[in-house]
Image (cartoon, rainbow, N blue to C red; front, top):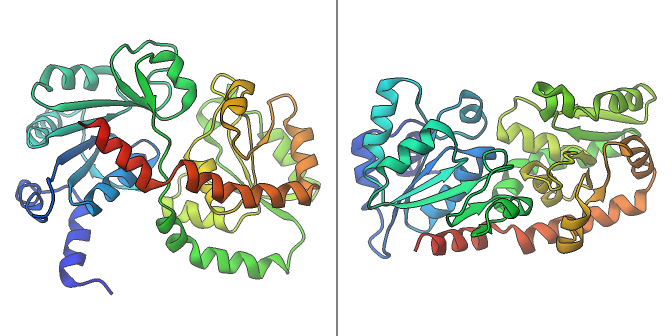
Length: 332
């Protein structure tokens, strides 16, 4: 049961922090050298996960977001960057932090921060199209290994997965899934239709609609849901359909959370990335997706193997504790 003090902290972490609160949290641990860390942007909720672990270790860590959708999904302290008052408030509050951990460095915000980062530890953390097709010569972090070719001095920081959070959030969903499994025959397929705004990237809709009409699977769309709801949807599914991005060749947090929950994942991974890292993913392409998916749906042995290998892969390569230890070293 939460204490009154813990409940008080929870309320504040889920809202815009007052200046008094920001100052006060810096003194909550006297046993370590505490850093004041500002995460700017919250792509896929990665900043929230990292900041939570940093607070566990005695640091002050806050996340600032500028997008309603990201705020609803993953939380943070939201402001309107496009408002002059919002920008003034952001830059004023950021002065209090030792570290500016900037996720998705791009555009006018990037230029504004780089004009003001004197005396700060300024770490750029790229997550995709903010870097893809460009070049970054400074030291930086990238969230997927394919981005390293655009950042010769960069380091790949594997996407952190909080296994304890996932287990807690999905305990009810897992129980329900196991019960329902005996009562149904169609395989439940979870899919994040990220391409809704990019029709040229839709390699899925026709195939999935046809398979559902043929009663070969039951489709679960995971879109515009809170992170907690999305995790429970994944937990109640049997198979995860990940991204097919020919110009990327890797996968993201959605697929990793599926693996962590012991779900087989089908997605596109390039030959180069697969040979180097060997992720436990059933590989497909935009041209072979229908055939590959139908084959996998009938291959219980392969699905069971992927279900076993997924959690081990996540624990060994994407442990939140290990990733955050690396982040703290990069701040030095």
